Image 1: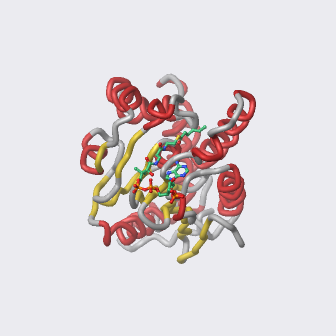
Image 2: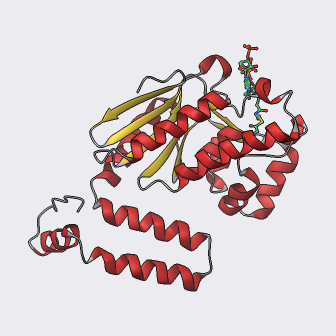
Length: 259
Ligand code: HXC
């Protein structure tokens, strides 16, 4: 678990993954992306981890892809770099665990794109969101043009991407980009409480719900409903469904085994 640019901390069933490159405001270079990909694989394979929190060290969540590294890229190397980020972020989006972004500060460009591939975004009142790429003469490249419009609607996404303007945490919450805004010193506790709440539920049911929501969002409603029906019925093959419903009838708390 020794990473140059990441910190991993396990607290019970929760894993806190911190992007730790504060000197460059946690900018994502190829090395950070490579480590992130490796860490995501490790977390995914750890059955004890139910929920992941991604945050950033210092005053930024992530201030974007690394501009120094990108400056002299050719179309070919830029394409490769974009692919690397797109793949890691897609892997995060499709993780079989819930991923919460605890957005502590700047979430710009690739940082906003990282936050958007997470399932839920809790923002500190100090957080700032934006896709400033056009000011650098480039488009977003880690799926900002895709996920932002899906999250906040096409009109707001176009406004944010065409202007490159930063918005504060309250505006991000108002347009649906952040789920919730909290005081800076309450950010991690809020994210951890939310993670614990989710981690206390039947994890197979949580995982199936995530799959159904994600697939449904990316397809037509008939296919989405069929996915939900398949996963709903599969729940009835689990211990947790028997336990959850028995516990309700016996008026006690369920003891899920996640099996
Ligand atoms: C490399 C970065 C960086 C970045 C900040 N730094 N953002 N280095 N890539 N994205 C570095 C600065 O160069 C500086 O290094 C140090 O971090 C501190 O930053 P400052 O600018 O001094 O801090 P501050 O004045 O507080 O301003 C904060 C900021 C600003 C507003 C966030 O740093 C900024 O505008 N950063 C760039 C944001 C951005 O354009 N992101 C989108 C990138 S494109 P030194 O060595 O001087 O101390 C992108 C594309 C994704 O993300 C898709 C790719 C395929």
